[in-house]
Length: 481
Image (cartoon, rainbow, N blue to C red; front, top):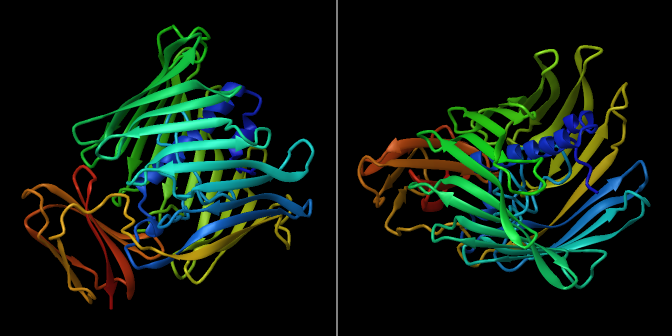
């Protein structure tokens, strides 16, 4: 279906268990990046603002000379979309669904494309014939949480193949998710996941149950550890992948240890997995950033070789950034152990429209000598302009008396009348119209504060104020003159 370039998967395809862990690892990295980033301007617009949202996407395979994949989207009023600058390893850089889970991909809660209906066409890998593949339907509550999601594949035009449903608490955190298989007109429960939170509202643990032989059995449990800045620094997942009876004790299968830089961005991820005897080193990822941008512009990945006892280089990605701070060229390299050197794999070239949304992504596949003169694949994004008629924040500001002034501003931005106790932790984030974080300050609140914006380029910026638990206290736009 979609051509996903994750180089280490190809090297481990001989081992199903390892390949599954590699896929799970990629999902965890994606979730961590989304948690560490704050780059969704289309999702933070205010009433009366005209903006764009993606309505279609097509991928052309120039080798076959045909379309290989395409999507058409429909929305309800005020629902938008956000491009993901982080991964950029494959054509789907608009995440049409996002899972909060680190140990199981299946519950869709806060996607970056808030569509009502998604129609998907793809090339059949067996017949190489391009045609209709599936239609997805999403339902949301008043806080934009995804409470229902249905997938209907081409082989079932009137009954959903998969159904998802979610429940949320008053803080808009998911508390339970259900995944159903639809069998002979009956929703057959397959998995259920429960989420628990600490006193600060941070996810502390979750448990996955599978319905088997008429009984719910626990099949996985995950614990989450944070530092004093609420950064997720460790994930411990327990399961028993060899237990077909679903009755044996759970064993720690996966462990992730994460570090962050001074801008709260994901810096390293070191993972370990259970090899049947003990928890052993597995994959190590390192990310690099330019300035205060929230997305990384370099990413290296190493896999541990237990036989020779060293970290083998696997993957290297580098992004070039244009004058607007947007990544416009992405290079991917793999490591050739015979040459003992990085060798080119792909090059993606991205162009943007007047609203700084990508309109074309051209993918060039290296042919062992050079990049071809014409792209191997071309992805085209299509948009519509819509007017936001209601406040469209994921979390509504709690106090109207917050003052952020002057607006427009030239050198210093003042913040006052924030309804939080003195000496409590407050984070103030500034983002530009392209979604990049240009500043983020963590402070102890003393009744008012002043931020220097003298070094910012003229233009529109978004101010977000959060308390120590991550709750959004205030959001508004300011103009820098």
